[in-house]
Amino acid sequence: AQSVTQPDIHITVSEGASLELRCNYSYGATPYLFWYVQSPGQGLQLLLKYFSGDTLVQGIKGFEAEFKRSQSSFNLRKPSVHWSDAAEYFCAVGGAGAAGNKLTFGGGTRVLVKP
Amino acid sequence: DAGVIQSPRHEVTEMGQEVTLRCKPISGHNSLFWYRQTMMRGLELLIYFNNNVPIDDSGMPEDRFSAKMPNASFSTLKIQPSEPRDSAVYFCASSSRDSGSYEQYFGPGTRLTVT
Image (spheres, rainbow over the protein chains, first blue to last red):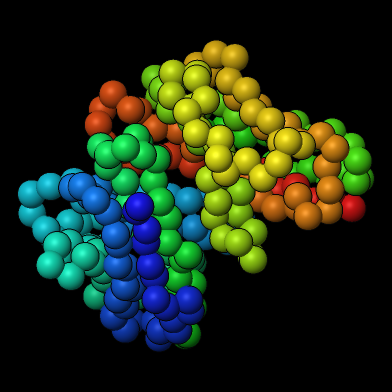
């Protein structure tokens, strides 16, 4: 069965500081991995995705994520956080397995940005 | 592209009433997903369709919930009768199964309040 764990429910970071959000997954085949962001009152927006190739992927809004197969992780990073990055972030896994094109989402990490 | 369109954006109804939520997926997408989001349970997949056919409805909480996709550009999620515990934000998402990329694009959601 596929699953995603985001160990941190809340993270508080100062504006301008770096941010790293953790994501661990379990998937029986080659995983496709995603990070989504949800601002208050909004739907989920795709930040970036990993299918294959370079394990460091760049996304929108200055975010990047690194796929580490040996650790079953896909952590999201941003070098310098802006106040507008305050939101909830979701990691998701899917792929060409028995689950079809269904995605499994983690529980989310809520990011608060201090001035 | 207009993105995924959901209506209404907000719905307030009384317990026992029928509620119908609507979704128009992105043109050309052939997979459609209905999710429910609450503080307590997070993001839950209710049902998804491929080429207008329901593939997995194991997430539908009970028989009061039903979903249809009569054509490639329209889907409904109906709750009859509604109960206060159905209060949540309901999201529709679509993806292109044929592209093999699996990323889902979310609508803005419908915030349902059942009193």
